[in-house]
Length: 137
Figure 1 (cartoon, rainbow, N blue to C red):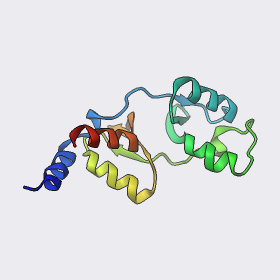
Figure 2: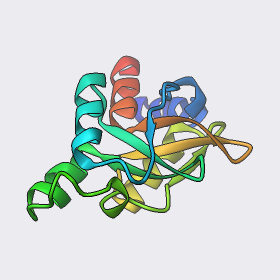
Figure 3: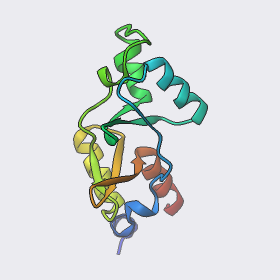
Figure 4: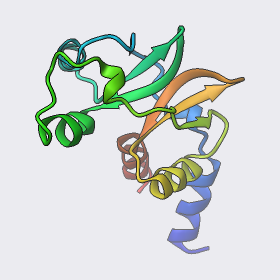
């Protein structure tokens, strides 16, 4: 078995639930972009889930701030729901990290909400995948 085959096997056997981030932060859709940016900065996080009716249904990311907000001069008083991505892209916690990488690549996204029994239980990012790859290389 080649090194590449071994690595692919390892990535297909590693479950998302073993590398995902379980600490989740969420905000109400009416929360201002200014408030969201402060929460992200203080928590050192790259994304925040947006809950509608108490259920995570969207996400705002640091990339949204760079691309959607800064580039178009959107007011920081704007409610997060105007900029956040809906619907939330999800993946099952028992899927492999190889599958997560494929989904991210296909959808051109860097973060996926992780679900168990239709409930969001974590988030997996492209950084998580790179860190896992680096630790196995």
